Image 1: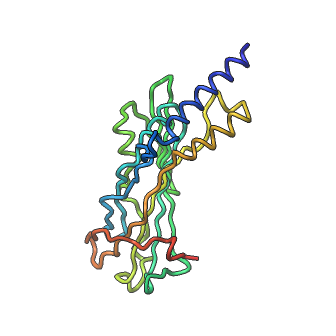
Image 2 (image 1 turned 30 degrees about the horizontal axis):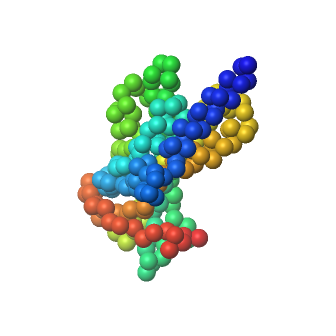
Length: 225
């Protein structure tokens, strides 16, 4: 009887995700598939570090929001690269950094636990405010991208580019006990993933100067490898 109830719960959860994933009648683009984009991307050249600030607009689609509210752990990955454009081609060995913001909603305590991982010192924050959680997840604030002494000699010829990915990272209880349901739900959840295009900004020439963002070439058409 217990096994039957679990299977029913699993089937209902999968049905919910089918509603989120499948397009509506008429072939119109579903709301969760809206394209996210990076905004307010700036570089600040301080005396000690090159700092990065940015926000993601449109990251919390209906699919991502429903997944988080259901308790599915979700991660936002920010890919940063220092590159030197060469006739629309990039250096083969850019300096890369990865920032990861992870959120998990406790449906019993009604709390969001957010982990902000800059690759050096992760920070864990807890809030019951959904809007506060969204601000933490969808923004980079004064991130220390590179020490000033490591900046290239002719830094004005270099750019920093940024891309973000939003993914649901695993299946929550109670479906993690059942292999068929686990596999199917994991496949369906992958359709909720959202990403942005690359954007880029030139390194400021002077200390405490800020650079407005510019559009970076799509790496799919200009491979780095």
